[in-house]
Length: 429
Image (cartoon, rainbow, N blue to C red; front, side, top):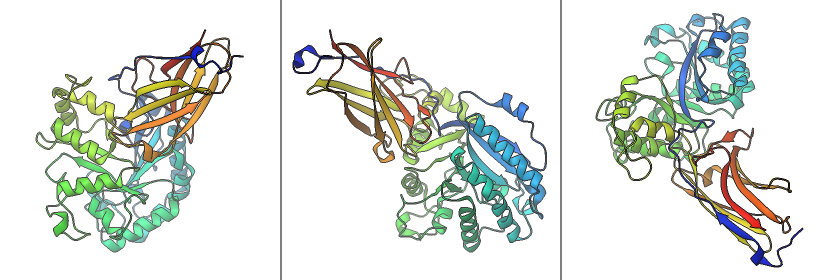
Protein backbone atom coordinates (compact mmCIF):
# COMPACT_ATOMS: atom_id res chain seq x y z
CA UNK A 1 0.00 0.00 0.00
CA UNK A 2 1.19 3.51 -0.75
CA UNK A 3 0.25 6.34 1.59
CA UNK A 4 0.08 10.06 0.88
CA UNK A 5 3.18 11.16 2.75
CA UNK A 6 4.67 12.15 -0.58
CA UNK A 7 1.81 14.01 -2.24
CA UNK A 8 3.81 14.59 -5.40
CA UNK A 9 3.50 10.94 -6.36
CA UNK A 10 -0.25 11.20 -6.85
CA UNK A 11 -1.86 13.14 -9.67
CA UNK A 12 -5.36 13.88 -10.91
CA UNK A 13 -5.90 13.90 -14.65
CA UNK A 14 -8.94 15.73 -16.00
CA UNK A 15 -10.99 14.39 -18.86
CA UNK A 16 -12.96 16.37 -21.36
CA UNK A 17 -16.59 16.62 -20.30
CA UNK A 18 -18.80 16.86 -23.38
CA UNK A 19 -22.51 17.59 -23.28
CA UNK A 20 -24.81 15.52 -25.47
CA UNK A 21 -28.04 16.44 -27.25
CA UNK A 22 -29.43 12.93 -26.76
CA UNK A 23 -32.85 12.51 -25.22
CA UNK A 24 -32.35 10.80 -21.86
CA UNK A 25 -34.59 8.08 -20.48
CA UNK A 26 -35.20 9.04 -16.86
CA UNK A 27 -37.86 8.17 -14.30
CA UNK A 28 -40.79 10.48 -13.60
CA UNK A 29 -40.42 12.61 -16.73
CA UNK A 30 -40.74 12.68 -20.50
CA UNK A 31 -43.39 11.86 -23.08
CA UNK A 32 -46.31 9.58 -22.25
CA UNK A 33 -49.22 7.94 -24.06
CA UNK A 34 -52.80 7.47 -22.95
CA UNK A 35 -54.02 3.96 -22.21
CA UNK A 36 -57.81 4.04 -21.91
CA UNK A 37 -59.56 1.23 -20.06
CA UNK A 38 -63.07 0.55 -18.82
CA UNK A 39 -63.10 -1.70 -15.73
CA UNK A 40 -66.43 -3.19 -16.80
CA UNK A 41 -64.54 -4.81 -19.69
CA UNK A 42 -61.57 -7.26 -19.65
CA UNK A 43 -58.15 -5.75 -20.41
CA UNK A 44 -55.93 -7.56 -22.94
CA UNK A 45 -52.58 -7.32 -21.16
CA UNK A 46 -50.70 -9.04 -24.00
CA UNK A 47 -51.93 -6.47 -26.49
CA UNK A 48 -51.09 -3.75 -23.97
CA UNK A 49 -47.55 -5.10 -23.65
CA UNK A 50 -46.82 -4.67 -27.36
CA UNK A 51 -47.97 -1.05 -27.23
CA UNK A 52 -45.42 -0.03 -24.56
CA UNK A 53 -42.49 2.16 -25.60
CA UNK A 54 -39.03 1.34 -24.26
CA UNK A 55 -37.93 4.99 -24.36
CA UNK A 56 -40.90 6.20 -22.27
CA UNK A 57 -40.96 5.72 -18.50
CA UNK A 58 -44.44 7.21 -18.04
CA UNK A 59 -47.91 6.05 -19.03
CA UNK A 60 -51.18 7.93 -18.65
CA UNK A 61 -53.94 5.60 -17.49
CA UNK A 62 -57.42 6.90 -18.31
CA UNK A 63 -59.99 4.86 -16.39
CA UNK A 64 -63.51 5.31 -17.78
CA UNK A 65 -66.10 4.61 -15.11
CA UNK A 66 -69.28 5.85 -16.77
CA UNK A 67 -70.72 2.33 -16.71
CA UNK A 68 -70.87 2.68 -12.93
CA UNK A 69 -72.65 6.01 -13.04
CA UNK A 70 -75.25 4.98 -10.51
CA UNK A 71 -73.78 1.91 -8.88
CA UNK A 72 -70.74 0.81 -6.96
CA UNK A 73 -67.73 -0.82 -8.59
CA UNK A 74 -67.99 -4.58 -8.67
CA UNK A 75 -65.23 -6.71 -7.16
CA UNK A 76 -64.40 -7.87 -10.67
CA UNK A 77 -63.91 -4.25 -11.79
CA UNK A 78 -61.56 -3.54 -8.88
CA UNK A 79 -59.63 -6.75 -9.63
CA UNK A 80 -59.21 -5.67 -13.25
CA UNK A 81 -57.83 -2.33 -12.11
CA UNK A 82 -55.42 -4.06 -9.76
CA UNK A 83 -54.19 -6.28 -12.61
CA UNK A 84 -53.73 -3.22 -14.80
CA UNK A 85 -51.75 -1.27 -12.20
CA UNK A 86 -49.61 -4.30 -11.44
CA UNK A 87 -48.89 -4.75 -15.14
CA UNK A 88 -47.53 -1.22 -15.49
CA UNK A 89 -45.61 -1.47 -12.21
CA UNK A 90 -44.00 -4.76 -13.26
CA UNK A 91 -42.87 -3.13 -16.51
CA UNK A 92 -41.33 -0.16 -14.68
CA UNK A 93 -43.84 2.36 -16.02
CA UNK A 94 -44.82 5.13 -13.63
CA UNK A 95 -48.48 6.00 -13.94
CA UNK A 96 -50.38 9.24 -14.40
CA UNK A 97 -53.84 8.11 -13.35
CA UNK A 98 -57.17 9.76 -14.12
CA UNK A 99 -60.69 8.52 -13.38
CA UNK A 100 -63.40 9.94 -15.62
CA UNK A 101 -67.08 9.24 -16.19
CA UNK A 102 -66.86 10.73 -19.68
CA UNK A 103 -64.44 10.88 -22.62
CA UNK A 104 -66.61 12.47 -25.31
CA UNK A 105 -67.27 15.86 -23.76
CA UNK A 106 -70.59 15.10 -22.06
CA UNK A 107 -69.62 15.24 -18.41
CA UNK A 108 -72.99 16.50 -17.20
CA UNK A 109 -74.78 13.52 -18.71
CA UNK A 110 -72.20 10.88 -17.83
CA UNK A 111 -71.52 11.59 -14.16
CA UNK A 112 -73.60 10.20 -11.27
CA UNK A 113 -76.92 11.81 -10.47
CA UNK A 114 -76.05 11.67 -6.77
CA UNK A 115 -72.93 13.40 -5.45
CA UNK A 116 -72.52 10.67 -2.84
CA UNK A 117 -71.92 8.14 -5.61
CA UNK A 118 -68.73 9.95 -6.65
CA UNK A 119 -67.50 9.84 -3.06
CA UNK A 120 -68.29 6.13 -2.89
CA UNK A 121 -66.22 5.47 -6.01
CA UNK A 122 -63.31 7.40 -4.50
CA UNK A 123 -63.50 5.36 -1.31
CA UNK A 124 -63.65 2.10 -3.24
CA UNK A 125 -60.54 2.83 -5.29
CA UNK A 126 -58.55 4.36 -2.42
CA UNK A 127 -57.03 1.11 -1.06
CA UNK A 128 -55.92 0.13 -4.57
CA UNK A 129 -54.23 3.48 -5.16
CA UNK A 130 -52.49 3.21 -1.80
CA UNK A 131 -51.17 -0.21 -2.79
CA UNK A 132 -49.49 1.24 -5.90
CA UNK A 133 -48.60 4.64 -4.46
CA UNK A 134 -44.90 4.32 -5.30
CA UNK A 135 -45.75 3.54 -8.93
CA UNK A 136 -48.12 6.51 -9.43
CA UNK A 137 -46.59 9.86 -10.33
CA UNK A 138 -49.81 11.86 -9.97
CA UNK A 139 -53.57 11.41 -9.78
CA UNK A 140 -55.20 13.88 -12.17
CA UNK A 141 -58.58 15.37 -11.39
CA UNK A 142 -61.29 14.69 -8.84
CA UNK A 143 -63.24 12.17 -10.97
CA UNK A 144 -65.72 14.76 -12.31
CA UNK A 145 -66.18 16.79 -15.48
CA UNK A 146 -65.85 16.12 -19.19
CA UNK A 147 -62.78 13.96 -19.82
CA UNK A 148 -62.21 14.14 -16.07
CA UNK A 149 -60.91 17.69 -16.57
CA UNK A 150 -63.07 19.34 -13.93
CA UNK A 151 -65.29 21.39 -16.24
CA UNK A 152 -68.86 20.81 -17.47
CA UNK A 153 -69.92 19.25 -14.18
CA UNK A 154 -72.58 19.97 -11.57
CA UNK A 155 -70.06 19.22 -8.81
CA UNK A 156 -67.61 22.12 -9.12
CA UNK A 157 -68.81 24.51 -6.41
CA UNK A 158 -66.23 25.40 -3.77
CA UNK A 159 -68.02 23.31 -1.17
CA UNK A 160 -68.20 20.21 -3.37
CA UNK A 161 -64.57 20.60 -4.51
CA UNK A 162 -63.50 20.73 -0.87
CA UNK A 163 -65.47 17.56 -0.13
CA UNK A 164 -64.11 15.76 -3.20
CA UNK A 165 -60.54 16.77 -2.43
CA UNK A 166 -60.74 15.85 1.26
CA UNK A 167 -62.38 12.49 0.53
CA UNK A 168 -59.82 11.58 -2.10
CA UNK A 169 -56.87 12.58 0.06
CA UNK A 170 -58.18 10.68 3.05
CA UNK A 171 -58.76 7.51 1.07
CA UNK A 172 -55.53 7.42 -1.00
CA UNK A 173 -53.12 8.61 1.70
CA UNK A 174 -50.44 11.27 1.48
CA UNK A 175 -47.92 9.78 -0.95
CA UNK A 176 -49.67 10.46 -4.26
CA UNK A 177 -49.93 14.08 -5.44
CA UNK A 178 -53.42 15.09 -6.55
CA UNK A 179 -53.65 17.48 -9.51
CA UNK A 180 -56.56 19.83 -10.19
CA UNK A 181 -57.14 21.39 -13.58
CA UNK A 182 -56.66 25.14 -12.98
CA UNK A 183 -54.83 27.48 -10.60
CA UNK A 184 -58.16 28.92 -9.48
CA UNK A 185 -59.37 25.47 -8.43
CA UNK A 186 -56.13 25.00 -6.48
CA UNK A 187 -56.73 28.30 -4.67
CA UNK A 188 -60.34 27.39 -3.87
CA UNK A 189 -58.88 24.48 -1.91
CA UNK A 190 -56.18 26.45 -0.07
CA UNK A 191 -56.24 29.41 2.27
CA UNK A 192 -54.54 32.56 1.05
CA UNK A 193 -51.74 32.33 3.61
CA UNK A 194 -50.90 28.75 2.57
CA UNK A 195 -47.15 28.15 2.26
CA UNK A 196 -47.04 27.36 -1.44
CA UNK A 197 -44.14 24.93 -1.27
CA UNK A 198 -45.74 22.94 1.57
CA UNK A 199 -48.51 21.19 -0.33
CA UNK A 200 -49.29 17.80 -1.84
CA UNK A 201 -51.68 19.20 -4.44
CA UNK A 202 -50.57 20.31 -7.89
CA UNK A 203 -52.12 21.01 -11.30
CA UNK A 204 -52.27 19.65 -14.83
CA UNK A 205 -52.89 21.57 -18.04
CA UNK A 206 -54.48 19.89 -21.04
CA UNK A 207 -54.86 23.21 -22.86
CA UNK A 208 -51.24 24.37 -23.09
CA UNK A 209 -50.83 27.13 -25.68
CA UNK A 210 -54.32 26.48 -27.06
CA UNK A 211 -55.32 30.14 -26.69
CA UNK A 212 -54.38 33.27 -24.75
CA UNK A 213 -56.04 31.67 -21.72
CA UNK A 214 -54.86 28.09 -22.40
CA UNK A 215 -58.47 27.18 -23.14
CA UNK A 216 -59.87 28.70 -19.97
CA UNK A 217 -56.98 27.89 -17.65
CA UNK A 218 -56.34 31.59 -16.92
CA UNK A 219 -58.42 34.76 -16.57
CA UNK A 220 -57.76 38.40 -17.43
CA UNK A 221 -57.31 40.23 -14.11
CA UNK A 222 -53.93 41.21 -12.71
CA UNK A 223 -53.12 39.41 -9.49
CA UNK A 224 -52.99 42.64 -7.52
CA UNK A 225 -56.52 43.56 -8.66
CA UNK A 226 -58.08 40.11 -8.26
CA UNK A 227 -59.30 38.14 -5.29
CA UNK A 228 -57.49 34.97 -4.19
CA UNK A 229 -60.34 32.79 -5.50
CA UNK A 230 -60.56 34.45 -8.93
CA UNK A 231 -58.68 33.54 -12.09
CA UNK A 232 -55.65 35.72 -12.84
CA UNK A 233 -54.08 36.71 -16.13
CA UNK A 234 -51.68 34.46 -17.98
CA UNK A 235 -48.38 35.85 -16.72
CA UNK A 236 -49.51 35.98 -13.09
CA UNK A 237 -50.86 32.43 -13.27
CA UNK A 238 -47.68 31.14 -14.91
CA UNK A 239 -45.66 32.60 -12.05
CA UNK A 240 -48.06 31.02 -9.54
CA UNK A 241 -47.85 27.61 -11.23
CA UNK A 242 -44.06 27.85 -11.12
CA UNK A 243 -44.17 28.39 -7.36
CA UNK A 244 -46.37 25.36 -6.76
CA UNK A 245 -44.43 22.96 -8.96
CA UNK A 246 -40.88 23.32 -7.72
CA UNK A 247 -41.12 19.82 -6.26
CA UNK A 248 -44.43 18.56 -7.65
CA UNK A 249 -45.17 17.12 -11.12
CA UNK A 250 -46.65 19.43 -13.75
CA UNK A 251 -47.59 18.57 -17.32
CA UNK A 252 -50.46 17.79 -19.64
CA UNK A 253 -51.17 18.31 -23.32
CA UNK A 254 -49.78 20.89 -25.74
CA UNK A 255 -52.47 22.04 -28.16
CA UNK A 256 -50.82 25.26 -29.19
CA UNK A 257 -51.80 27.64 -31.90
CA UNK A 258 -49.09 29.48 -33.77
CA UNK A 259 -48.63 32.53 -31.53
CA UNK A 260 -49.09 31.02 -28.07
CA UNK A 261 -47.30 27.80 -29.02
CA UNK A 262 -44.27 29.22 -30.81
CA UNK A 263 -41.03 27.53 -29.79
CA UNK A 264 -39.71 30.59 -27.98
CA UNK A 265 -42.91 31.07 -25.97
CA UNK A 266 -43.31 27.35 -25.28
CA UNK A 267 -39.77 26.86 -23.96
CA UNK A 268 -39.96 29.97 -21.78
CA UNK A 269 -43.24 28.89 -20.22
CA UNK A 270 -42.24 25.25 -19.80
CA UNK A 271 -39.12 26.34 -17.97
CA UNK A 272 -41.09 28.80 -15.84
CA UNK A 273 -43.73 26.24 -14.83
CA UNK A 274 -41.35 23.25 -14.54
CA UNK A 275 -43.03 21.00 -17.11
CA UNK A 276 -42.16 17.37 -16.45
CA UNK A 277 -44.37 15.38 -18.81
CA UNK A 278 -46.39 15.84 -21.99
CA UNK A 279 -48.81 13.72 -24.01
CA UNK A 280 -46.83 12.20 -26.89
CA UNK A 281 -49.80 12.08 -29.26
CA UNK A 282 -51.97 15.13 -28.71
CA UNK A 283 -51.65 17.23 -30.56
CA UNK A 284 -49.53 16.29 -33.53
CA UNK A 285 -49.97 19.67 -35.25
CA UNK A 286 -48.33 21.44 -32.31
CA UNK A 287 -45.39 19.02 -32.24
CA UNK A 288 -44.92 19.26 -35.99
CA UNK A 289 -44.74 23.05 -35.64
CA UNK A 290 -41.99 22.71 -33.03
CA UNK A 291 -40.20 20.28 -35.30
CA UNK A 292 -40.15 22.86 -38.07
CA UNK A 293 -38.73 25.60 -35.83
CA UNK A 294 -34.98 25.81 -35.28
CA UNK A 295 -33.23 26.62 -32.00
CA UNK A 296 -31.29 29.87 -32.17
CA UNK A 297 -29.65 29.88 -28.75
CA UNK A 298 -25.91 29.52 -28.43
CA UNK A 299 -24.22 26.23 -27.68
CA UNK A 300 -24.87 22.64 -28.64
CA UNK A 301 -28.57 23.18 -29.38
CA UNK A 302 -28.08 25.85 -32.01
CA UNK A 303 -29.52 24.61 -35.30
CA UNK A 304 -31.41 21.68 -33.74
CA UNK A 305 -35.17 21.49 -34.16
CA UNK A 306 -37.43 22.66 -31.37
CA UNK A 307 -39.14 19.33 -30.79
CA UNK A 308 -35.79 17.70 -30.04
CA UNK A 309 -34.98 20.48 -27.59
CA UNK A 310 -38.29 20.19 -25.74
CA UNK A 311 -38.10 16.39 -25.67
CA UNK A 312 -34.63 16.51 -24.12
CA UNK A 313 -35.58 19.01 -21.41
CA UNK A 314 -38.84 17.60 -20.05
CA UNK A 315 -38.17 17.03 -16.35
CA UNK A 316 -34.59 16.85 -15.12
CA UNK A 317 -31.45 16.87 -17.28
CA UNK A 318 -28.23 16.54 -15.23
CA UNK A 319 -24.94 17.55 -16.85
CA UNK A 320 -21.56 17.23 -15.14
CA UNK A 321 -19.92 20.59 -15.84
CA UNK A 322 -16.69 20.56 -13.86
CA UNK A 323 -14.54 18.06 -11.96
CA UNK A 324 -11.30 18.69 -10.09
CA UNK A 325 -9.14 16.50 -7.90
CA UNK A 326 -6.43 17.11 -5.34
CA UNK A 327 -4.21 15.12 -3.02
CA UNK A 328 -4.16 16.25 0.60
CA UNK A 329 -4.29 13.56 3.27
CA UNK A 330 -6.25 11.44 0.82
CA UNK A 331 -7.74 11.73 -2.65
CA UNK A 332 -10.29 14.54 -2.88
CA UNK A 333 -12.78 15.08 -5.68
CA UNK A 334 -14.92 18.18 -6.33
CA UNK A 335 -17.77 17.87 -8.79
CA UNK A 336 -20.23 20.39 -10.21
CA UNK A 337 -23.49 19.26 -11.83
CA UNK A 338 -26.03 21.48 -13.57
CA UNK A 339 -29.69 20.66 -14.08
CA UNK A 340 -30.55 22.05 -17.52
CA UNK A 341 -34.04 20.52 -17.61
CA UNK A 342 -37.36 22.28 -17.17
CA UNK A 343 -38.05 20.68 -13.76
CA UNK A 344 -36.26 19.67 -10.58
CA UNK A 345 -36.04 16.51 -8.54
CA UNK A 346 -39.25 15.24 -6.98
CA UNK A 347 -37.47 13.28 -4.29
CA UNK A 348 -34.02 12.62 -2.89
CA UNK A 349 -31.40 11.13 -5.20
CA UNK A 350 -27.83 9.94 -4.79
CA UNK A 351 -24.52 10.43 -6.52
CA UNK A 352 -22.37 7.32 -6.55
CA UNK A 353 -18.72 8.21 -7.12
CA UNK A 354 -16.31 5.33 -7.61
CA UNK A 355 -12.56 4.94 -8.03
CA UNK A 356 -12.06 1.82 -10.09
CA UNK A 357 -8.97 -0.03 -11.30
CA UNK A 358 -8.73 -3.48 -12.83
CA UNK A 359 -7.10 -5.94 -10.45
CA UNK A 360 -6.96 -3.50 -7.57
CA UNK A 361 -9.27 -2.55 -4.75
CA UNK A 362 -12.03 -0.14 -5.78
CA UNK A 363 -13.86 2.35 -3.60
CA UNK A 364 -17.32 3.88 -3.90
CA UNK A 365 -18.84 6.84 -2.09
CA UNK A 366 -22.54 7.72 -2.01
CA UNK A 367 -23.52 11.38 -1.68
CA UNK A 368 -27.09 12.63 -1.03
CA UNK A 369 -28.71 14.94 -3.56
CA UNK A 370 -31.73 16.81 -2.19
CA UNK A 371 -34.55 18.27 -4.33
CA UNK A 372 -33.76 21.81 -3.16
CA UNK A 373 -30.16 21.36 -4.34
CA UNK A 374 -31.14 20.46 -7.88
CA UNK A 375 -33.54 23.04 -9.23
CA UNK A 376 -33.46 23.93 -12.95
CA UNK A 377 -30.52 26.15 -13.87
CA UNK A 378 -28.74 25.49 -10.57
CA UNK A 379 -25.22 24.14 -10.29
CA UNK A 380 -24.94 21.65 -7.47
CA UNK A 381 -21.47 21.30 -5.96
CA UNK A 382 -20.45 18.10 -4.18
CA UNK A 383 -17.16 16.79 -2.85
CA UNK A 384 -15.82 13.55 -1.42
CA UNK A 385 -12.64 12.00 -0.12
CA UNK A 386 -11.37 8.54 -0.84
CA UNK A 387 -9.41 6.49 1.71
CA UNK A 388 -6.07 7.75 2.95
CA UNK A 389 -4.32 4.69 1.62
CA UNK A 390 -4.81 3.12 -1.78
CA UNK A 391 -2.73 0.83 -3.88
CA UNK A 392 -0.53 2.50 -6.45
CA UNK A 393 -1.95 2.48 -9.91
CA UNK A 394 -4.41 4.20 -12.20
CA UNK A 395 -7.98 4.72 -10.98
CA UNK A 396 -10.88 5.70 -13.18
CA UNK A 397 -13.20 8.03 -11.27
CA UNK A 398 -16.78 7.50 -12.47
CA UNK A 399 -20.06 9.15 -11.48
CA UNK A 400 -23.55 7.68 -11.48
CA UNK A 401 -26.85 9.16 -10.34
CA UNK A 402 -29.85 7.27 -9.01
CA UNK A 403 -33.11 7.77 -7.18
CA UNK A 404 -32.62 6.95 -3.52
CA UNK A 405 -35.95 5.25 -2.88
CA UNK A 406 -35.57 2.43 -5.41
CA UNK A 407 -32.05 3.02 -6.81
CA UNK A 408 -33.51 3.58 -10.25
CA UNK A 409 -30.91 4.98 -12.62
CA UNK A 410 -30.94 8.67 -13.56
CA UNK A 411 -29.06 9.30 -16.78
CA UNK A 412 -26.78 12.29 -17.28
CA UNK A 413 -26.34 14.29 -20.48
CA UNK A 414 -22.61 13.69 -20.82
CA UNK A 415 -21.04 11.80 -23.71
CA UNK A 416 -20.49 9.02 -24.46
CA UNK A 417 -21.95 7.08 -21.51
CA UNK A 418 -25.09 8.59 -19.94
CA UNK A 419 -25.26 6.05 -17.11
CA UNK A 420 -21.67 5.96 -15.86
CA UNK A 421 -19.74 9.13 -16.63
CA UNK A 422 -15.93 9.10 -16.57
CA UNK A 423 -15.03 12.16 -14.48
CA UNK A 424 -11.23 11.89 -14.29
CA UNK A 425 -8.23 9.76 -13.31
CA UNK A 426 -6.19 9.49 -10.15
CA UNK A 427 -2.83 7.81 -10.68
CA UNK A 428 0.37 7.00 -8.84
CA UNK A 429 2.66 4.92 -11.05
